[in-house]
Length: 205
Image (cartoon, rainbow, N blue to C red; front, side, top):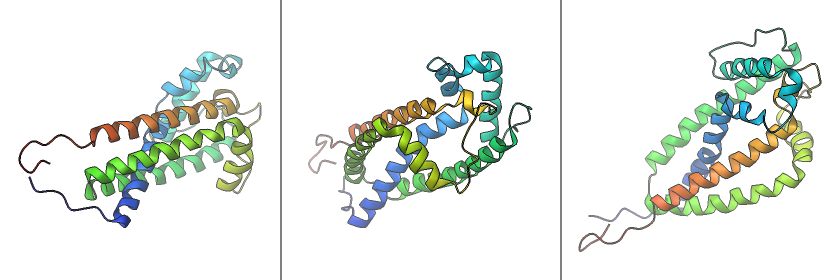
């Protein structure tokens, strides 16, 4: 079989960015659009118990439906402030979704075994470095991430907010740990699937 053309440096860079983005977006979308991770975290912190476990589950399902555009935050438990914030967050995720479609298209158009393998190797190193944020997560989350992403203070929760109970700060730290682990697994899978195979004929593959 004819050997594929070598991938150029610019193409390799674009493929690297697309694969890195998908590695992070896929687990992030799974966490955001489905209730399983929220409900699982209720076992890791006492916020849901303090709020009321049955109510917490109901609000979690309401929240994930809202993020999927299949429902609204209609219960009176939600404060107006957090409704505004969650609407902002949903808009961001809408943009991330379309960016993910673009990243998938890039991977399909620039598909190249060696390029994907090299990109996945570089991604694993970069993603592993992200774990260095975890010891300083509280500072990162409060003073860097939110301050950069939002130009208001609607994101600051208090005891009147549903988010204060179902999404305490430790929830987001665990979520970051999950995303790092999942992104590592995805890129490891890509690396293993794109390893050079043995020759299967006079010209190999």
